[in-house]
Amino acid sequence: MTDRPPGLDDASSEPGGSASGRAWWHHAVGYAVYLRSFADADGDGIGDLAGVIERLDHLSALGVDLLWLTPFHPSPLADNGYDITDYYGVDPTLGDLETVRRLLDAAHRRSIRVVMDLVPNHTSNQHPWFRAALADPAGPERGYYLWRDPAPDGGPPNNWVSCFGGPAWTLDPGSGQYYLHLFLPEQPDLDWRNPAVADEFDAIIRFWLELGVDGFRIDVAQGLVKDAALRSNPQLAPWDPGQRREQQWAAFEHRYDIAQPETLDVFGRWRRLCDAYGAVLIGETYVLEADRYAAMLRGDGLDLGFWFGTMHAGWDAAALRHALAAPLQHVDDHRVIAWAASSLDEVRVATRLGGGEEGRRRALALATLLFCLPGVPFLYQGEELGLLEGIVAPESRTDPVGADVQQSRDGCRTPMPWAPGPNFGFSTAARTWLPDGGRRAEDTVAAQLGRDGSWLERYRALVALRRATPALRQGPFAWADLGHDALGAFHRGPWTVAANLGTEPVVAPVAGTVAFDSLGLAEVGAQVESITLAPAQAVVVATARASAVEGGPTTPDADRSAA
Ligand code: NOJ
Image (cartoon, rainbow, N blue to C red; front, side, top):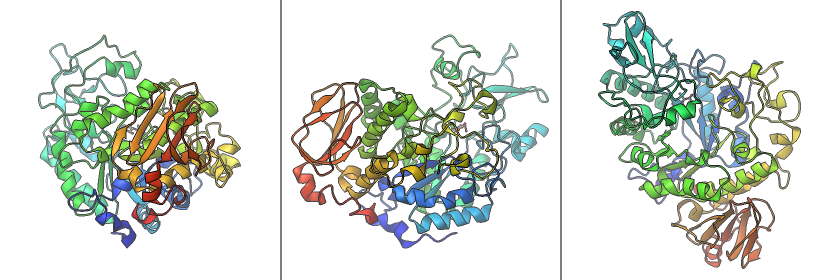
């Protein structure tokens, strides 16, 4: 196990920690690294673990203290690493166990905790368990997966569809049975009602905790346990496998395939394992109905769960306000909400909200709200640079999901632009695994770091303000009605956060000292009686009481050590 320096255990005395006092993540700022596209240290055109080590200073400078890494295990890459053949191994193109140890040490030295991806819903079809299950239908591994006889007409056993489109069942001609896969046929689902599967994952989790990881992001957390009888879902609309994948998914009410209550037992089991190590459990929890999302977060299981409503709203004030309000309305303890506007699977937020400079402005306005709401905010790599969706020509796409541009996830996964020059500093290879996405010199970290008013500096200022301001992390939350439908606004104790989510200027009756302005129109420290917010302008304002209590908005790093 790598040493955790004392600084990493300093949250034990934080108010609002769990009974065991281990809830350091309540104050964290998260950052998602798409490993294959973050930084390539060995020059093969693929990002790797050593590359992350080399770029940790960027994360420190940004103020990140929780790093989530996408999977680094051996994989045939049917789904870019989310199809694993060895949960204890490291893919040689990404590093080895020693590199993981070095990364943990290097991150911990900077007070950054490292959370790895755990992929327990499915394995690769090349995993030894699945190979054994295919080879010997009477053997123990057969029961690790979900097999059923065909329906009377010879078709799949029920009407479930894959998240990637098409039926969720594939026939094994050898045994004449179908196996279930909520994603690709190359990703067979494990049967979480089989205790042997749970035992296997206990051992995997312990292995990585012993090595020193600080927690897990649980892939497809909502999907682990399925209905015991595998009943068909109620159908809401006509379904056909030629439809777009979202449309196929929306054709059914997902009553029996996801968000089953027994999943909480699995989380509880893992929580007991993680408690001994002070490790965090973060669920992907991809459930768009807020009540069902909240249900996944109850009990003594997940510490955090990602909310995806924010990735499904366009630039529409009512839709955005709803996307923020829904989880807050349904979740009992707001601190468990993990907020994000971009991810490895979705069109980048700046593009989704309109593209160009306007989209970038809107993305930062939304981030301002997310960083001040109760819960834990995450950035997806490059969001801090205002990156738009990368451009990837059809012949360069690698994502198995959707050959067409609207469905492919390649555009949000193009390499991180570090500096002007070849491959924008991502790699020295002649050719990178995905093209650079059409970045410009001004998109790079080197061009933006230290440049007044750059996207990177604005995101850094926002992160610094959150870190410096206990009330923005844990102060009492209340929505603010500022009298205009275009505004999204709330109070955190004596602080007010307001964003113009519309397309016209709006006067916001907010009085106090400006601590952050996403567009840099108002000076930090300016006293205002009210403020005219331009479209996509977001501000954080300290009332007189906030200034007195917190030392004012001009001391950004005041309580960094407690954050
Ligand atoms: C969610 C991951 O983020 C995505 O990239 C992957 O395709 C699916 N889970 C399946 O593992």
